[in-house]
Amino acid sequence: MKYVLLLIPCVLALLTPLYNRVDPVLFGLPFFYWYLLLLVPLSSLFVYLAWKVESR
Image (tube, rainbow, N blue to C red; front, side, top):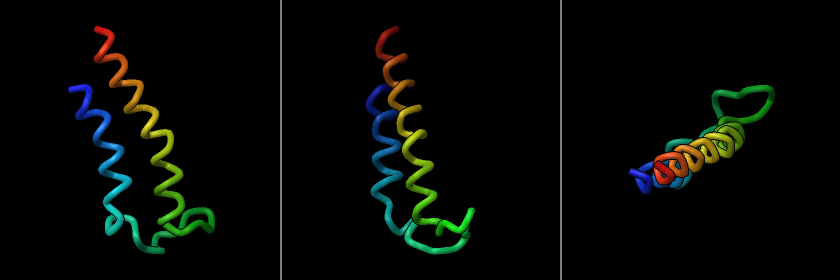
């Protein structure tokens, strides 16, 4: 289970066709940039959840 939680953000970052576009624009940033910026805290959340699963 721990490895699945760690794999999810990696797969989301590697699926380039998913976020290789400009629209929609948020605060003047194309989708490509704000998707990757959103992925940083999301990845840390998954790392935290994997740590909690492992420490049980």
